[in-house]
Structure formats: structure tokens, C-alpha cells
Length: 187
Image 1: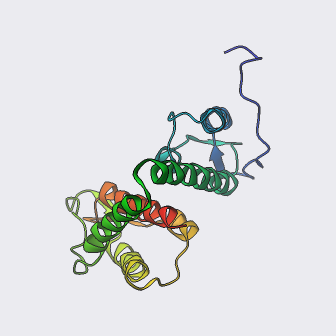
Image 2: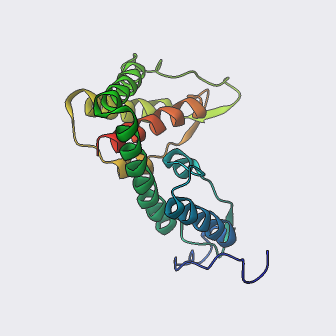
């Protein structure tokens, strides 16, 4: 990549002191790719791709909260575009039906008995702390059932401590992604 092809640096603050941040070049390249995809209207990236992107952590990288906030706004923009395109293609009733089905699938998972909502890793491995995941699951189930107040930002920011024999991370993360998808679909 030549100097003229290099993505422009963004204006995120740098991580302070000994804190690590996101590797700057990787963030800049992804943001340039996202901008091009959005402005050109291509299917190169989706809201789900933005939600799942991960960057290496390095000293003197970009401050994580600032980048995560920007990614949230970018994901919102992609989701709105995808929603508009889907409604134009399949119609509002089909879009609402798909969203309702996804919400019900998630609710069925979250409504399982405590300590049995997700598969667990072996007792020798670390997974998400069961009590913390169950607490968040109950709040998200209440949101889906009754509209209890939960924001997309709260779901995006959820983090769990680890424990031996905990819940399988990939399953929990997939359900959280689905909750965000439902929330953005009805936004």
C-alpha cells in the first residue's frame, strides 16, 4: 500500500498510560472499508460484520470506548440501510415477520431455566460466568416479553467474567448478537 493509498488516520484519542488500545492501522483500514462500502452501497459489509469486528490490542492504540462508540453508530447506519432495502424488497409484513421469529427464537433460549440456558464448557476450561449471563438473560427476556427498558448500547457493552465450567462463549455471543439485530430491526 503506498502512502497515497493508505487510509487516513482518524481522530480517536490514544489509550492512556499502560492501558492498551486498538491497533491504529487495523482500525483505520476497517473504517475506510466501511465508509467505502456504505457510500458505494455495496454488500461488502453488513451490520453484523461491523458488530463482530475485532482489533488487536496494543500499547498506544486507539482508546477502546471511543472506537466502540463509533462502531456502534456505523452498525446503526448499516442496519437502517439493510432494513430499508429488505422492506423495499420483501415488504414490511415479511420484514416484521422475520424479526418477530428471530425475537421468539431468542426469547425461547433466554427463558430456559437458570444454569441451563447455554451449553457449558468442560470443568477444565473457562467460559462465561453462569450467574452473570443468567442475570443478563433475565433482563433481555423481560425486554423481549414486556418491552422493559434496555438499550442497544447496554447490550453491546455487556461483558462477563470467566469461570471454569462456565457457559460456552460462542453461544452466548451469538444470542447477544441476535438481540442487537432484533433491537436494530425495530429501531
